[in-house]
Image 1 (tube, rainbow, N blue to C red):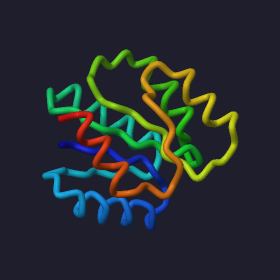
Image 2 (image 1 turned 135 degrees about the horizontal axis):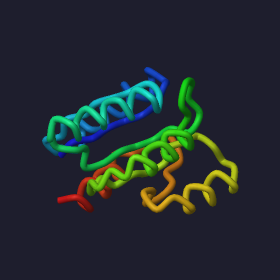
Image 3 (image 1 turned 45 degrees about the horizontal axis):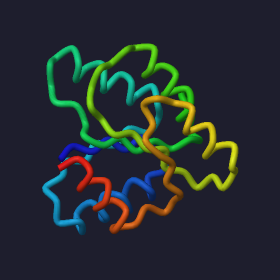
Image 4 (image 1 turned 60 degrees about the vertical axis):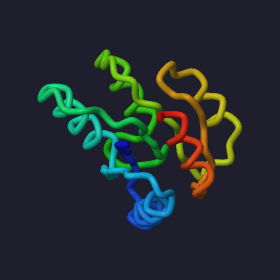
Length: 127
């Protein structure tokens, strides 16, 4: 199981890493602190024919390239990979939840904090 977390908050990344460890799944987690770094990472995987993440969790508010901008660039790249993408945000705005539904690559919206149970559900959807 390969997981990509796109979030600029080191504490959130640390918490998600600990949650991944507690799931019992053999999961490799990579974190990128903004959308541009994530795009560069995914392009590199594609160009070098390396396995794509099974699951991508995307924060909304980040510097350089935020979550929405990341999705715009990602969808324009036309990457045809079977990664499950979820917005993972502390936003409580209904318009963010609705906006997430407008992207064909986004499977859902998860409010922070991420729980062990929810991550296990996401992993089980990919097994």
